[in-house]
Length: 265
Ligand SMILES: [Mg+2]
Image (cartoon, rainbow, N blue to C red; front, side):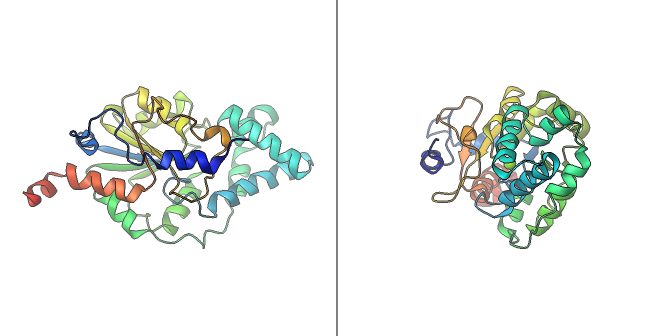
């Protein structure tokens, strides 16, 4: 099994990495034309080493134990197989077993969020970005809303595009992004996307969005599956990598907002 910690550490070494630009052309200037800022939810807007995603992950396993009468190890193996094969475990359960998606989503997102702390610096950093801000998640709207509230981000986003809006077809499927662009009138060529799973940035990059892979801070646990942890530092669909989303956004805002630029001059 790959060593998740060491591979994450490799990514951290290239934090806020301007892949396509020289040191004399600050990467942040590439965001000057962005008018729509799109964020994944889980392990992107809250730290990957928080206890939230493991709770959801364990609820999914519990759902499958109950559904199939499997032992925990077998249920876990099937859960991860479906996740990798279909993008979400739910998708695999729907296609292969006709599982009611709404019952699944309600069960797996019924978790204690009390350990999540409000992140007001992140809220301020997102609000300072010029333009619209949206959440694009493979989870449910209720989960995204409750989690955003716990993080102090409830008023930051214009809307949430959830797995039900995506007609239960998850990222990284092309159709999901097409539905998202259409519903929210997003021009991908003037949009940026922030995600912790690199495969979910393939279509955004192809459509012309600026893509940012958000990775755990140095020394923090990495909640991604081993196959999701990038083996290469040169993923062609990842424009930037950051282990500090708040700092990355503050840096963008400080150098792309006209009033901020004029105030500095
Ligand atoms: Mg995520």
